[in-house]
Amino acid sequence: MAHTVLVVPVPALEDYIRARWEHYDPRWVSRDPAFTHAHITALAPFLAAPSDAELARVAAIARTTAALDFVLDEVSAFADGIVHAVPSPAAPFAELTARLWREFPECPPYAGEFADVVPHLTLDRVGPTVSLASVSAALAGVLPARARAERLELHRYAEGDCRVLASWPLGG
Image 1 (cartoon, helix red, strand yellow):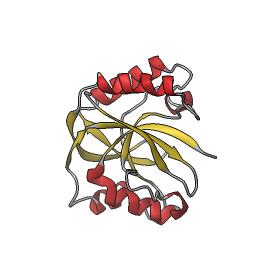
Image 2 (cartoon, helix red, strand yellow):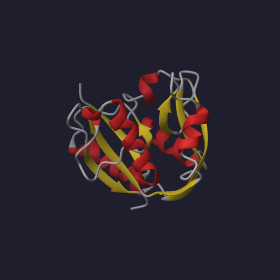
Image 3 (cartoon, one colour):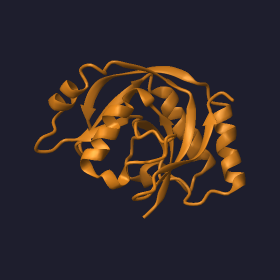
Image 4 (cartoon, one colour):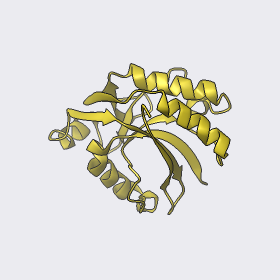
C-alpha cells in the first residue's frame, strides 16, 4: 500500500540509512536519485493524493520556515525499540510538524498514535543483533553529524516505487 510523507532530508546519514533499508527490505530502496532515505519526518502520514492547492499550502509553509543548521550526535531508543537520533535543536522541527498539522488537521502526526511527537531520524530497531551500542559503534565515524535542513519534500512510499513527488526549499 502506497503512502505519502513530508520529510526533511538528511543526506549526511544517507549511506548508513540506505544500507539498513537494503539489509531489511531491498524492495523499498528507492531508485529515484533525488530520494533521501535518511530524513526527519515532518508529517506522516500525509494526504494520499494531494491537490495542487494542497501542495501550494505546503509550499507556503516551506517558504516561511527558515533553513537551519543542526547536529545529530546522540543515539537513543523509544520504548518500542526504534533506535534514533534527535536533532539539536529539535524545536524548529517540532514547530514545522505543528504548523503542517494545523494546516492539515486531517493528518495527525503518526496517525495520532503517540501523545508526544519527538523529532528524530530513525536509525534502526533493537533486535537480536541490534542494540544501542551496536548502532552507536556503527556510526562512530559519522556521529556527531552536522547537517542543514534546507528542503521539505513529499515522499511516496510503495514497494518498488519510493520516490520524491515534490520538493520545496525552506525559507523560499
